[in-house]
Image (cartoon, rainbow, N blue to C red; front, side):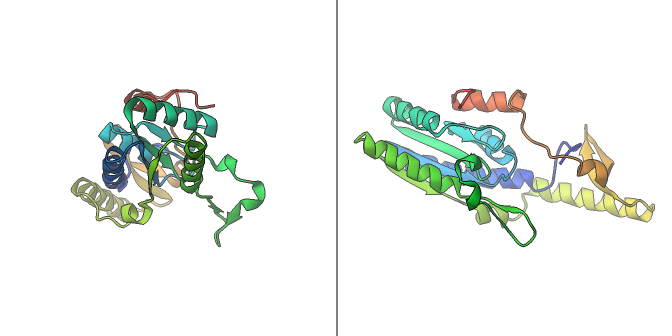
Length: 225
């Protein structure tokens, strides 16, 4: 959301995602030329993927909707990484790489929201075919923990934060406030007009400190095109 520093559930989500990545890493280091490929939530923005990667520092490449990439670049990076270290962990947000799919493959649900094509499966097949063509052994494990993450109980910090939001929401309602939500901005709880909150979408800037931290942690190139 725009104009908020923190939303409830986010910390729980990327913490659960980090657990899935840890298991992918264990699988990757347990076999020759092991790749752990994890697809995470993130239809239009890659915040969960980015924060989960930073939480672990075991991820070698993060692919997000905010950055287009060439599959050839990903394959070359994977090949170089396996040759030098013998294992690789890739995290991809579900909305990344949708440009690889044909326009007539795009569908919508009952609410008119776009049904995303499975970028995780696409990457899985591309990696398998690439290394097969190189006659290189590959042990790839693809993990999609989406509903495991979504159905996880709230972490205590999120539970406390959600309770505070609820309390301030009741106070606002009793004061006659409408058309607004409770936000958290620069250390304070705020009354955020819904028109402002829904006026755009918060996405990762590729020039931001957050994304620069991801690049440093993973060692992936800035330009994937």
